[in-house]
Amino acid sequence: MKASMKRAVRFYTSHRYENALSELLSLDLDPAENPDVAYYLGLCYARLEQYEEAILYLETVVTSDSDILHKYQSRMILSYIYIITGRLSLAAFELDALLDEGYESPQVYAAKSYVAYARKETEESVELLEKAIAIDPENANALNSLGFLLADEGRDILKALSLCKRAVHLKPDNPAYLDSLGWAYFKIGKVEEARAYLRKALNLKSGKGENEIARHLKAVIDAVDAADSETHT
Image 1 (cartoon, rainbow, N blue to C red):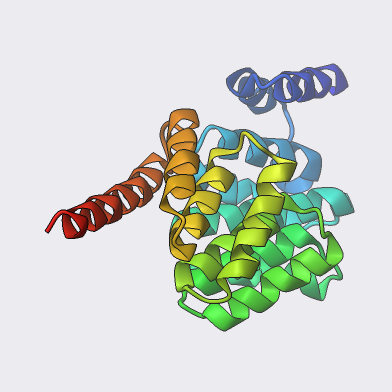
Image 2 (spheres, rainbow, N blue to C red):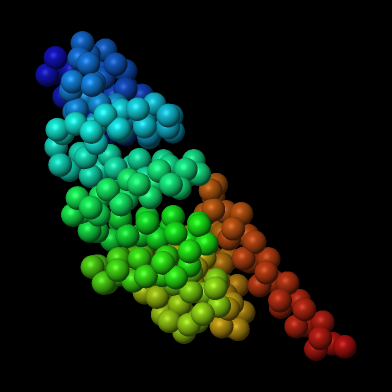
């Protein structure tokens, strides 16, 4: 039994999630009575984007006497699943539970900020990101998120630009961060810089998020075309 569990963990850590899942399901163990099994089942289903199954097992972990780190990670993954499936109240519940249990981390505050922003609670979203940055001034995700939020709202643009620059400095090939920096440049009126960063972001990005970058780049190109038309009339 222990050998099978070890194989499952090895499969999971080597990103062979279907193999790990198969190994875990073959165990003669009840996940409700074995939090470690429930934890890895939840992780595998989450990685395979079978979210309802993941929720079932991760909820088992957070209500058990499981390893503290496993409970933290399970709540974080649950909050992510609830966010991407549009269940913001449940996401907020998981994140508030983490804070109540003393898990103050940039990741928790950044995720909670996303929920607030999705609810159009902009001020709370800004405050939560500022808390994340106060804990970890080098947290690229929080820096980028706050920079983009400020730029997109058209408030404190110079601060937005500075935050986005810091995020890109930390992770220069992250397309989401390059997109935010390009958008901040556009909001400050520097269209050439905006176009350069947005094009680089689009070249690096494929799949989820590509449409938003393309939309930002189109807005910049349209603004340049409009300015050219005015010049020639």
